[in-house]
Amino acid sequence: MVATAIVPQAATTGTSTPDVYRGGRFEPNDFVIAAEDSGGDGLILPLAALRTALEHDGPGNRRLGLLFSPADRLEDALPLFDRIAVLAIDFPKYADGRGFSHAARFVRAGFTGEIRAVGDVLIDEIPLMRRVGFTAFEVRNATTRRYLSEGRDPSPGLHYQPGAVPEPPAGTRPWLRRRAT
Image (cartoon, rainbow, N blue to C red):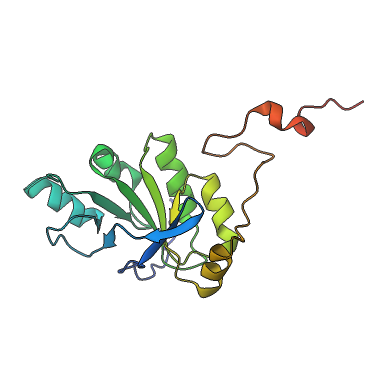
């Protein structure tokens, strides 16, 4: 008998912030999270709605994104990689860390577009999110917004262990390469 866990689901993030933290600064948000396809450009849609939009009329010249919830499966999103510009991974609540695993798996699977954290994004998570592949953040938390706008990003420049994204060359971390005497 195989035991399965029932993981409680929080509400999915249903709206976007007016700006997104990318490249060390807040920029106007060029995508909007929507529950269903309204025919516009720059939409981030849940998996089922995105599939429907792409099956019925294709993306055309529209830029579309995928809102990937914690319970979604990577295998279901793989065929959409070349058709989406943004992958928004939802963090519906602080204690739900499945988004970290999802981002690392998307990077390993070859997704090269923007990976955006949406939902409950806090300042202490941002360095770890970057390590697994996140490149942009929709930040709602007032303290996190203040820290980032003041340039107080806690992300370190060098790391002891490799992550999912490209790292500095090994020669830049000599303390890991010295032999004990």
